[in-house]
Length: 433
Image 1 (spheres, rainbow, N blue to C red):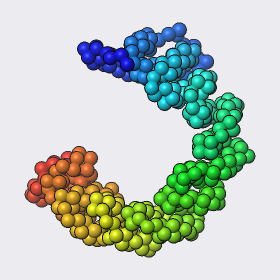
Image 2 (cartoon, helix red, strand yellow):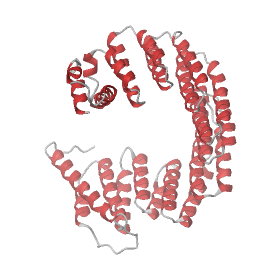
Image 3 (cartoon, rainbow, N blue to C red):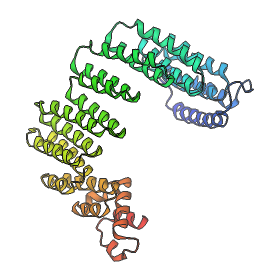
Image 4 (cartoon, rainbow, N blue to C red):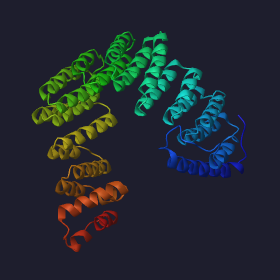
């Protein structure tokens, strides 16, 4: 790999950055113009950015820089010039160690900027069939957004041909699941059903519980997007990993509740709970009980939420590793705040032996309470943290805590009350709110 001169590099990066910023600003002015609009033979800013980008001797940054310029040309409606540069970027990318990933980025940029024919060409050049299908599906979705359904269907056909050629079940399942998103957006019900069933069948052939579970979780999410609740629940039942299943169950339950089918959502969570109960690892149990408890709360089942969070608390006591126990306790504390059990959260914080960590937990809880507009509770939680930790909370958290104090105390809070705050930074945040 050729080394660049240290004296040259700062100027080069600054110059290229300035040119690309100018190019993006310029291209945004014309981004809304239709592709058939007249455009100049070239653009001086983009031309300068291209010349600068080509000076990179390393093919990877050269390809990345040229991709940005080519995308700007595409957004300006200068399609032929955009295509030339995008294919130049692909050629440079193929010389680099990260060839596949960089060519994928070129394909994505082509799709974003309306260079659809170029995206087709890149899909043929990319070394991975999976990458090619990803590019084609992104292109088809972009064409649909542009109102070009005929072009999108043609692009989907290309992606389908590549999906059918993949023999390994794992990448094939991913490809069909991705293709299903295009069929959904295009309203192609028959093709959508076939793609989702094929993705499910292929996922079931994948060895390894976790890999198979992740693929099935993706398919279940795709069914949710298509409002096919029964199929989503059915596929969720096929997921062997309790971790993945509980995450998917949460999404399914919330989606069902949004449709007014709360009892069905609760049934889904109960099914996932049985899988969590069978786990031998208390840390995983604590994490998943917390996730399910929060989901129960969100679908309007507070009693079930409280009972499930209680199981998470019980699981913490069985975690042998102190660091894992602390991490699980933090998650359960957040869960208790979510479902409105502040007293339980504070009791759990009290079980933390390290004073600094305990104060950090109080600060995090106070910020969460402020987010839930429970300002008085947020103030009380802040008061329990050491002022040194409050001071180091960071600008965003201090802003939230300052606003919580102001809203809890009212706009006419006496200055002497604010001055009694031990943290200068918190005091300033209250003044500023």
